[in-house]
Image (cartoon, rainbow, N blue to C red; front, side, top):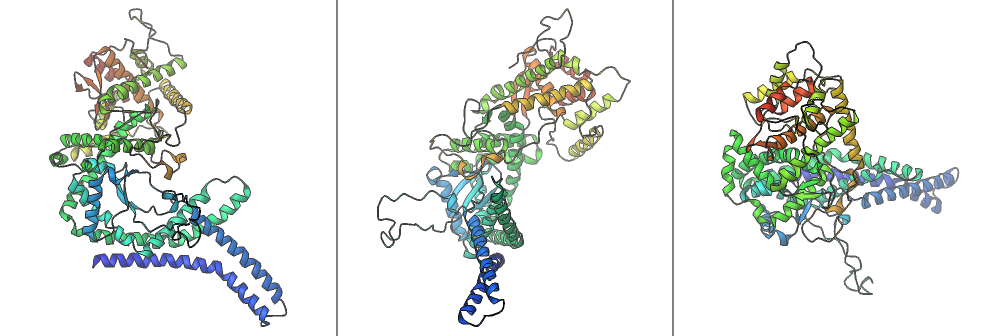
Length: 628
């Protein structure tokens, strides 16, 4: 009963959308109908004399102009290419078990199976209509000279496009983290949506709305001449008016389709679906953490992790080890993962990882010398070590530009080399009256927790309950001392100048970087993103983080300099923490409590907490470090 109610509500809303389309067509044809009546009346002698001849010609010209404008608007709506989500297409030959699972699920739900399967580097799944001619393969070339003649060859001159089911888009992290049964339970309500989508009225209403949306996008693009801008402005006004008129009905139609699909999926693995929904939230948390803490530093260095989906499993396994809320999730790893449904999961993971770098960072479309993949085993040396030494080198370049001198201690050799002591001396604030620096340092330590290197200083902890409440309270106390722009006040004018210099230097480096490639350059037959469906000018489509402020840049660069000194003088090593990203390892153990001490130096100009930390680990700030 619920399925029928939801489907009926969706159909009624679809008819409302189609009625709006019919009314728009009637408004366009009304002047032509009036002109026809006047012309016929004049030719038959029923409407003659007075001002009727002038009226007849005015209405006829107006009708012709309206028909011409309506034809132009209809042409723009019909030819506009609807937006398509960037995905990695999965051919049936590369995942026969996955296609079999989806078809069996469609049979159990008594709905048409999806026409194809694609993966997206996100924790979501949906159905996507790709029946527009611009989204399909090009028509086959007919070699027969008489193939296009009407009545010959079965009318093959213009092949008709058969209606196709929507494409099933699956989040790639689901395949690696979820088990086969959990994936089937999560996909059940999604696949059930192909039933209402096959209804002619719903399909026609969706095509109309998508066409209007695509036409609005076309009219919003910058035009070349004033005439084109004027014409597109008129088309945009009409299409926006129609889109606003049917927006409410279209939203209710989609709600009805979703309700009908959810009700139909109740009969398939209902109990398992409840458990699987918990895995959806966990996978989303692990995926977001992996992108922002682990992948983003690599992308900034011109490297892209080639096994992001496999990294999700490692990150969530580490989370289950740390957090008591996820204790029961690690036992699932003994079951068959859903990625076994793919013939070559490594190739698919690599393609999804490259697409993720493209969407979230705006990286090139293909690997190259400046955009190379990196394995997780090579991540500490290829990404962490290079990132720290590159940022330390940038910090010393800015210090040189500011005219900061090296320490003048005659007992220290190599005074001209890049040393941590130079940074500490420059950031140390002049002596001031006693303050509550100790209390502020404690607040920062509570706010940022026991961390490895503090590469991302706006990190949230993984604790729960009272720990989270204490963390929020400490954050509110630490945020009290801020400047007019909302950023914490830095230790001194020299510190502020150094932060501004780092921001300018980084901006110059980004501006001098070569432009990314706009598309693939060669014929690889392995799975890859469908680059032709979307525009590269809007990359990145989903930026992970806003640009770093001067305070954050300075803290990151000082942290990098400290880590370089620890590696070169104290035997530390770069490492990878699956939840926090780059980590500093001392004797194989992650060094802790560095982030709050760096913030104390940057914001207060107090180097003593950091110097105590360096003495405890045996780091020698006066020794030069190796830079990139």
